Image (cartoon, rainbow, N blue to C red; front, top):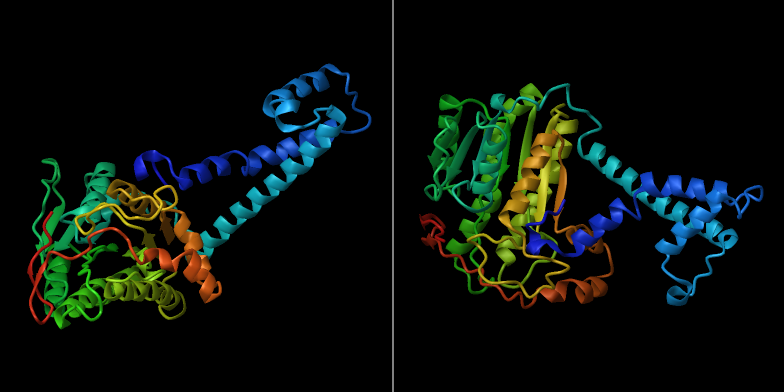
Length: 398
């Protein structure tokens, strides 16, 4: 759900939220439809006090005849109001049913056990890339909700923020996630020194911002190994314990670029498309191969976010696709964790419909969506120092 931090508050998600809570709220419109139907019965006198009072309400709600050309004759308005409210309520009911079906389908039709996610001091959360950006704010949000939560940060860069002095269960490990041998070593240390993680947030990401022809071998190696190979290897290290306990949550940071790959970000977009496939395929394996339906998966499909990776403001219409704040996305991630259920998080909400348009004819998708990424208006060139093999020599700096 969008918050006030997105684009300083007002955008299409805000409008959609208001409409959903009012006009498309079945708890409001269906009772209104029933009341209007009952009042429009032939036996109901239009001269009764109730009818007179309702007429005044309709007059206020619908403004005036001259403004909208609406005849507020009660005998005519009530049946029209009943039909409109019934249509709106039915639409809201379908939206609620769709949300409910999406929730249970994403979670293997398996509810949480009573109190399963109620005691976060028992959980061990691994956040890759927690030194800054989204990861930093996820860690801060988790600590704000329960300071006793055990959190492990794995990052190549040192912490760019100072943890609260009362924090006793925050652990930092330095590792280059583009190197499998370092992943294996750091994961062994985490298990020995902290315990088996129950939550894995694959947040660490790298972008180089070069075309396929401009990018070096090292650029491609670093991007794919950090963004896609590392999540695979971290799952191989930490997922077995979650499967044995039939308890855990894996959060994957995908991107809108997986849906509409822009120029200069093809390697990044390809790696994020792989993350999308990893999320979907892993869900099938957990259910049908490992019998671990309570290991939850959340996939985050976000548009541009104000982090050190992005400099400038995208040329995309900010009302439709606002630049996201890190607080917005971190709140959404932590809300998903605390709910105990997985799913797909689209921010802004327009990304959900962009994903649906992938099934449209290619020419239509290009005209409506894809061609808009040709000139993004932001500087996405990575500032990490990378050698010819794709190994990190220097972390991203703010």
